[in-house]
Image 1 (cartoon, rainbow, N blue to C red):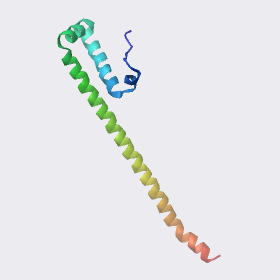
Image 2: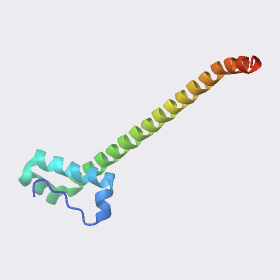
Image 3: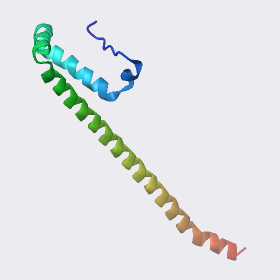
Image 4: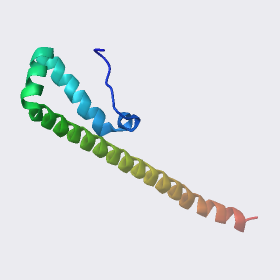
Length: 103
């Protein structure tokens, strides 16, 4: 079970915050090894948990910032397209009016 993360409830498996928290423990486990991780967790579990909570919060904020940036880019792109369509319509208007007058 070296590559398995187990959640007590299905809803936990859908939580980015919980995934980041648990994957921080995976990193801690790999860095410390099983013996030192177990020793530290049983003697000062708050140290490991605080780091996992902090890291999970940073991951969540980074994802939220990236999503906000993506939404801003999409809105900007939509605005550029709308401006291009408006410019094209404005440029075409005199040609349409001249064509109508000469018909």
